[in-house]
Image (tube, rainbow, N blue to C red; front, side):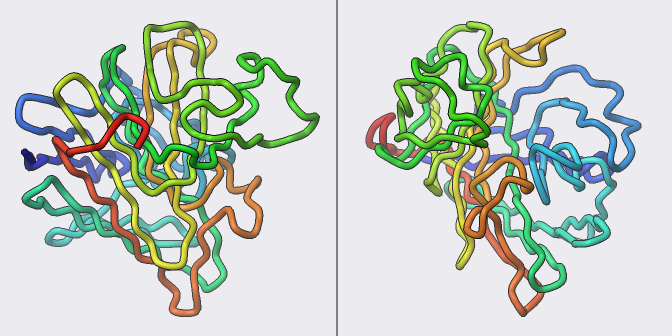
Amino acid sequence: MTAVLDIVTDPEHGGRWTSLRSPGREWLWHRPAPERENVAPDEEFVDAGGLEECVPTVRGRPDHGAAWSRAWTREGDTERVECGTFTLSRTIRGTTAGAEADYVLTATPGFRFVWAAHALLDLSEDATLGMRSGATTRLFPEAAPLLKQDWPAGAPWIEGQWPAPHGLPLDRLGPDDGTAVGAVVDTARCCVHDGADRLALEIQADGQPVSTALWRNLGGYPAAHPYRSTGVEPMLGRVFDLADAGPEDAARVPESGEVRWRLTLTAACRCRSPHM
C-alpha cells in the first residue's frame, strides 16, 4: 500500500523542507535553532533539521553549500535560488506513490558541484536502512576510532562494502552511543524501515555520478552539545567535500549549461529486505 506525501518548504529561509508527512507520520527531524532566522551567505551552518539543499558542496566551504543561507523565490510550482556562480530551481509535486522533485542547475559549462538532499529523519532506535548489498561504501576520517585498523595517513576516505564496511555496521541505528559517522554509498536508492513505516528515496540523473550519503549521528556531534540525528541524503557526486572530489566524484555542467535530475520519494514502499 502506498501513501501520498505532503511536503512543506520555506523559501524565505534557505528553501528548507520543513515537513515531509505521510498519513500518521512526520518523517523530518527538527531542533530549536532560532538563529536560523537571520543567517547570511557564507556563515557557519545552523542545523534546524528538516531537509536542506546542500550545493555546491556539503562539507568544506561554504559550509553545507551556498543555497541554505539564501532566500528562494517562488513562481507557480517552481522555487529558485541564485547563488552567484549558479542557479538552482526545483519543482515538487505529489504522486500516487509519494512525491517527485525535479531539479535544474544552471551554470557555465564545466562547473563542478556536489548536491545532496540533506534529509534529517526522525527515526526510532529500531530503524534500519536498506541499500544495495555489497555496494561500495566510502567511510570518512571520523570513522577511524571505530575501526580495528589504522587509518591510512592522509586518506580522505577508505572504501568497503555495504552494510558493514570494514566491519562497521551502518544499516542499523540503535541507541545513542556517542558516535557520529558519515558515509557515501554507491547506490541511487535507499529504503528506510521504521516499524510498520517505509520511506524510499531515489535519485536519477543521466550522465552524472549518483550516490546516497548517510550521516549517522548517535549523540556524537557536535562535541560541546551533542544530539541525535540521522541524515539519509540522495546525492549527485560521491564525496561530502567538493575539494576532495576526483574526476568522477562530482557532477559537471555540460555544454548545454544545465544539469537536470529527479528525486523520487515513495511512502510505504515494498522493499525486499533491509539489505536490498
